[in-house]
Image (cartoon, rainbow, N blue to C red):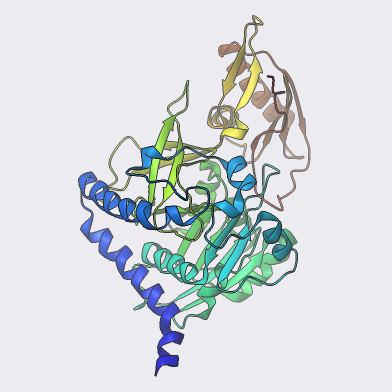
Length: 432
């Protein structure tokens, strides 16, 4: 009897997280409700989980504001001091390179699109907690309805395998490092009713297969550009949902109306304004996770909040768009030589897409202090390329930015990690 109870513990953790997520979806009706719930959970978290890790040990915190803001550099330099298991970054890399997962814990890593991969460590119990929250948000009728999920991402972790061990959910992972062309026939053969994949993969499926008939589609792991959303929704005649998830945890999911809502029932968001724009960048505190403490962690994502309430009535803040990353804000010299101009990825993207309705794909890359390269598909006609180039030049001129812009048509290969149509590869030299 005791052995049977312990065997059921993971599923009990899943069920508890699922029921809590669904209960909160009904209970949290106003912003005041959300803030009261957060205050209660954060107070408990500050008193129990936070002091258990070395970075905060021996200190008392009455509120989030008492904690310092940290970033990836601080976290990675002190990794073992941010997790209660005291697992070092070196040990994590060894595990990911072929070692065994530590008893009772799971180690994983991000894809490292900026060349700097992040690590995470959770307990096996927290893995089931994560799955319960995901099911509660994405499959509200679970377990009354089943799901056959195709998960196509650039990196697999043991985090996802828990879903394949439940009776009502079947999950198959497809490794995008093998290439989207290679995994497409396998996804089709799997016959999923739910597909979770980056938008460039969903679009490839939409354009190269006519047999898939999913009930649910979710974009994940990349910026969802409008040009991709239109193509995907037109093919499948479904509202495309989004999952906002990173190494730092589950940060948001879409409601039935397709609106992305921040997961404020599990994560506290401080939203810093981005100067010169209507964008914000989040500082997150995950008050559900306890093994690895993520407290006032500054992310480099750029979000545009929705201006109008969502028709679903949820008090969780709605995101109109995940624009990209602060790493990909172009920094260009001013024409008068006095300082620099910053241009956010969405402004650059919209200028190109608005230049010619036929543009469905492109790459815009800052390669130097004042050097930008524009790439359109190899079959792009010269007038399309010229229109896109002129649109970027007009935008930069209007912003008083100086840049040498080159433009050409070339094959645009599918990414093996994540698609970044607007990308800043050049980094300013640090002084001081």
